[in-house]
Structures are given as structure tokens and as C-alpha cells.
Amino acid sequence: MNELLNNLWIHPSAILLMGAVLLTLVRGRARSVLLVAVPMLVFARVCSLEPGTHGVVQFLDWTMTFGRVDKLSQVFGYIMSLMCILGSLYALHVKDSSQHAAAWCYVAGSLGVLYAGDFLTLFLFWELMAFASVFLVWLRRTPESLAAGFRYLLVHIAGGLFLLAGIMLRFQATGDFSFDLMTAEMSMGTWLILIGFLLNAAVPPLHAWLPDAYGSATVTGSVFLCAFTTKTAVYALCRGFAGTEILIAMGVIMAIYGVVYAVLENDARRLLAYHIISQVGYMVAGVGLGTQMAINGVCAHAFAHILYKGLLFMGTGSVLQMTGVSKFTELGGLYKKMPWAFLFTLIGGLSISAFPLFSGFVSKSMIVAAGFEHHQTTAAFLLMLASAGTFLHTGLKVPYFIWFGKNNCSQETWNRAKDPPWNMCLAMGIMSFLCILIGSYTPYLYKMLPYEVDYHPYTAYHVSETLQILLFTALGFFLFVKKLTPEAKISLDLDWVYRMGGRGVLWIARRPAQAVDDWVGECYRVCGLAWVMVSARVAAWFDGAAIDGVVDGLALQVRAAGDRVRHLQTRSLQFNLFSAIIVIATVLLAYALATLVLR
Image (cartoon, rainbow, N blue to C red; front, top):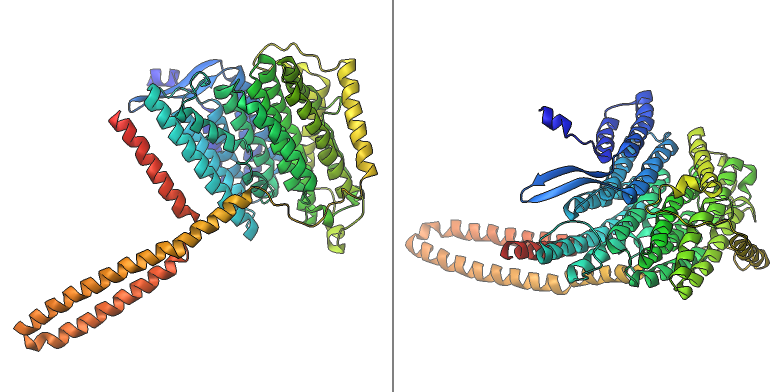
């Protein structure tokens, strides 16, 4: 017992999971205290972790490592546990304990991935993250959120299957579940693992789940969603695929793709969700570069992104919370009614636009500088171009069309508008302070990065270059503001492909597959009935008195068979994509297990 206690290592995720259970048991002031105390305890635990390997558990013939602590995992652990505090503070007024429990389980999954030392542990927490986060969408309890949640879950189940298949194939080839850099051997299993990571990073064309779900989630749920899934995937890419050059092109495409769709978007939260794709593109490109400066830039930008993107979702979420709408065509002129929310959202917009003295300026530029240093000049210039688009839609479009511009609010919306509750304002105020702190005092962030930092963002050239880009972008916005006015329309994205694919699966299930099933059922019924009739005749020949009972029994069987056929036809209309996913999962899992057994 003493040896067990001496070797006991408390995982930060365990604190969150226990806290989620306790939340369902307490009410009133005790619940409010718990909502603040548990995330702070998790943050303190993350800060107290010693470098090294901890939490090693033997499971069957495998070793599971729950606590690999180094500078890479710690910088992500620090900001994610800090975000858990701020997100819980922002949601303090929410009375639904299930929202808080889902959010904490979601964060526990992310922290589990960060400290996982092997693929078994990683996959365990990876799936916890996926299944907990979907409830942050469903708990909004609208038809749109229900549908978006199912699509989100289906896509992430598919991504989990790719990841599991890749893990099994890699284990078959190497006999090892260790989670480390894999670029030396890009086998089929490694590529499948990469696809699983890229799906969570929302790399096009695997990205449409993100704006679909984040725009439909609860007000407080979207704040958590914007911070964890994609950045956990970025961490996994840093750990396993640093220096994979194909990621440079993917990251650049993401950066530009997200900007284009953000400019077209009418819903404020969907706009921010599309821009997550753009900003994560910088990080994916930095992982592809793979140099020490690039990886430092990726970690710094992930750190800054969690803060300013969380702040932006808090600001737009406050508008949705207080007015009930989030579309630009239904808002405008709210700066008089919501001054604090406007100020905090403006700080978030300046931070994401890499304005000097704000957080994005000291993180995003490190990745661009690493691109030039690595002689990837085309990629670096395209990332700078995407930066101008960022200021266009998030630094200018969001503040202008919500708080200024033409007042499109209905009378009910205008009357309801006011600054949000104190806890929401306090969370946004702290986030704003941190965005300014990081941009103004770089050692706070730079000393946490994995490698020694030899980069100075505040040079005359860099400041002047950035200001020129921002000022010319602002000039273009105000010259063409009428052309940029949002319209109440839907922009088709690549989710059209799997939506139409889903209809195709439904058609196959309802028509050809159901026709074959009906034919087989009819053959079975007819052949079985004929055999029963022969048996009945033989029985009647031996006992003529029993013939009436046999006929009555046959009539009952025929009616029952008809009822079963009609029931199956009705049930077939309820077929959905889960059936296809279950079939795929069964086949992949069976193949993976078979390869392990026959190895």
C-alpha cells in the first residue's frame, strides 16, 4: 500500500472527471464554488507537473503511459487548463449542470491526449473528447443543433476509425504503440493516423463539421469547442508529423480557404468558426516546416489563438445570449446597448489580426518568418495575404456590422440588448488582458515554448510592414463597405458532398437493398409456407379431425408473417448513416484484430 501511494500520480483529467460527477450531486452556491474551484485545481496540477514519464500502467501485454510531461505538452496543457477556468467562469450563470459536465469531460479528453505517451492512451482520450464535445452542440436543444450534432458525431466516428485502423496497422508493422515522431517511415498505418489527426484539425476537405457544429452549439459550449479540438490535433501533429512537407501546402490552403468563406458568411459565430480553419492553417503549415522556430511559432500561435478566439466567441456569444440572434443582417448599432461586449470583442479582433501590441502579432509572424528562413517564400507570402483577409472580416466586418453600421435589429431585439451578466464580462476582461499581455510582454509566452527563442517581433521593418497591410486593408473595407454588406444567403461548402452521399446511402437502403430483403423474405415465406402446408396435409391425412386446427394455425402464421414484413418495411424507412458507420467500424475492427492475432 505504501509503495502504491508513493507511486500515485494524479492526472489532471481525473480531477475534471471527478468534478463532472460531483456537479450532478450539488446545487446552488456549492455548485458555483465547484465550477471555479475544480478548473483552478486542474490548472495548479498542470503547473506542478514534473518533467518525465508518469502514470505507467500495464494493460494485458501492453504498457499505457498516461503522463508524458515535457515542454511541448506543458505549453498546451498550460493554456488549455487556463482556458478551462475562463470558460467555466463565462458559463457560471448556466443552470444546466449537464453543459458543465460535458465541457469538463471534453477538456479532460484533450488533456489526456496531450500527456499520452502511447497510441492506446491517446485513442482512449481522443474518443472521450469526440463523444463529450457533441453534447455541447446537442444541449442547445434546437432542431438545427440536433442535426449538426449527429453530423459532427458521424464525421468524428469516421475519423476515429481511420485513427484506430492506422494504430493497428502501425502496431502490426512495428510491434510498438509508442506515440513519437513518425516521419521516418510513412507506411499505410502512418498515413491513416495522419488522416485521423487532419480531420480533427479541420483540414479541407475534412473541415465542414467545424462551422456546422460550432455555429449550432450552445453559447458557452462554442467557447470550449473553439479552443480544444483543433489545437489538440495541432499538438498531435507537432508530436508525430513535424517536418512533413505536404502539411505546408495543406496549411496554406486552409489559411486562404477559411478567409474566403469567412468573408461570405452572414452568421457571426459561423464566421469565427470558418476563421478557426484559417488560423489553424498557419499552425499546420508551421508543423510542415518542422524547424525549431516553426514549432515554437506553432505553439505560440496555438496559445494566442485559444485566448483571442475564445474571446471572440465570448463576445459574439454575449450578443446571441442577450439578443437571441447572431446574424449580421439582424443586428447593427449595438455599441450604445452593449459597450463592454463591444470593447472586448474589438480587442479580440485586433489580436487575431496581428495588430502590434496584441497577441497575434508576436505569434503569427514567427511562423511566417520561419517560412522565409526555410526558403518557402511562396507559402510565407500567401500566409501574409491571408493575414490581410483576417483583419478584413474579423477585425473590421464583425465589429462594424454588429455594433455600428445600419441598425437591422427588430424592436424586440433592440429592447433585449444589454451587456451580459458580470461573470461573462469578467471572463472577457481577463481574456482581453491576457491578449494584451502576450503582445506587449513577449517573455511571458516565449519562455514556455519548446525550444529557445531567437526571434524579436518588434523590429522597425516588421511593425511598419504589418501596419501597412492593416491600414490598406482598412482603406479597402471602407471604400467597398457596401459590397461587403452581409446578405441572408447560404454558401455551399464541401459538406455538400457527404450530405448528398448520405442521401445516396439512404436511397440504396430504401430501394435496392430493401427490394432484395423483401425478395429473400418472400422466398423464405413462400418456401416455408409450402413446407408447412405439406406437413399439415400429412398430419391431416393421419388425423382428419385436426384439419380445422391446422388451417386456423396456418392462417395465424400467415397474418403474423405479413405483419412482420410490414414492420420491417416501416423500420427500413428509419435507416440512417449510423448503419453504414457501424458496418465500416465492424469491418475495420475485425481486420485489425485479425492482423494482430495472425501476426
